[in-house]
Length: 94
Image (cartoon, rainbow, N blue to C red; front, side, top):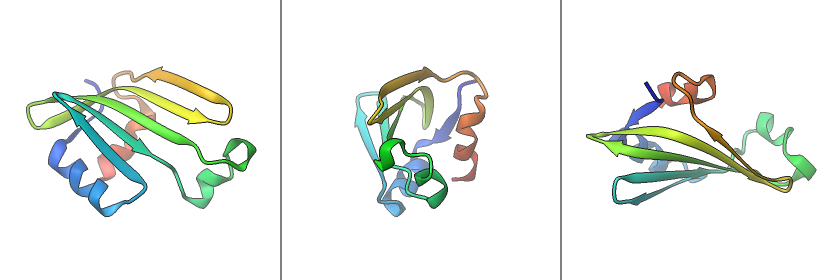
């Protein structure tokens, strides 16, 4: 099963965390965020911010994520999200 989260729970999290933005169009979601922790900043290429975008589909009251994109000074990379992808573990803590 693709990584997922309850839509209302994610919306509440985004409201409380200004580095996250949520865009909804029909049954699809884009979650944009800029990591801003000191641990993340140490890995920024050229010391510039990195934007992450997660793409998901709304099914019932849950969002199932299927693609992860990174935009940085090095360019754009896209990764299809696999079932139980370890990079998505953070969703369990929201």
